[in-house]
Image (cartoon, rainbow, N blue to C red):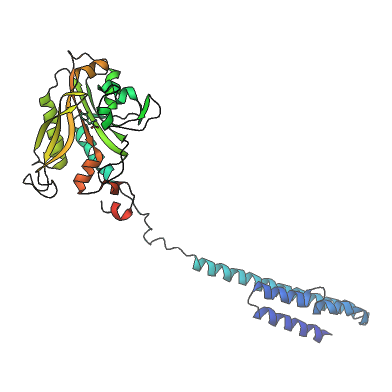
Length: 339
Ligand code: DAH
């Protein structure tokens, strides 16, 4: 009997030692120690054993069982430890490796141009303010000397929310709002989105951006306007830039002008870029119309001022020599990554 037990035990031990996985150990457990296991079968056959021998046989079987269980436990522990070791190896992190940097985006050409303009004017003591894109007809047109039926409304056809409210066609609307507040003197620029009922092509979009400028003080003159815009042009396009003011008409300024800058590509000789002109039109400007001052609650005998309006896209297109405005809005990375 003792031999038989020893035999079973050795078989079991050998199997456990060979086992490569917890499943194999479990198999061995069922085979030897389970309800129908080989060792259990010996206990069941106890009735055939000589009664005197029974306690001894019982003790041998239990001993063998305990030994097998212990070996199984050890093997299990060892397997777990090896598994953990393997996992730690596999998941090892080298903290000295340089980190993966998230890809940095960069500013849109419009935004770069805007910041440049803001830098120049804040440097001259101007404040940057904003106004609503959905605007009353009153601020977008009426108070800027563009009453109902005025031909200038045709040039700035827009999207009407109702008969009183429009998507603003120009940032000039902010002028009226700021003057109305009556905090003087005024020195502001106001960048923002404007809308017009225009079809999309290389130079038009139903939505684009302008930057408005307004200065109101007791003794401001056209000379101040020219000086300010000349500094602006030189800062933006280079120290050698010359400016030229051509008479023009805007309903809300008198006199009005358009400012050209000498072509920064050819220096004014005339090239493909300036279409042979030597000059590039850059903005509209003028002295704020006395009637506009009045409508906005200021006394034109005490106060005068000048205003100007620049197209932001126009500056971005010029500065970066982009020939199609649509590129600015299409979000094509092959284009945007060039800046
Ligand atoms: N708002 C004008 C436009 O959209 C641009 C402009 C011209 C603004 C003259 C001004 C100005 O403030 O004085 O065409």
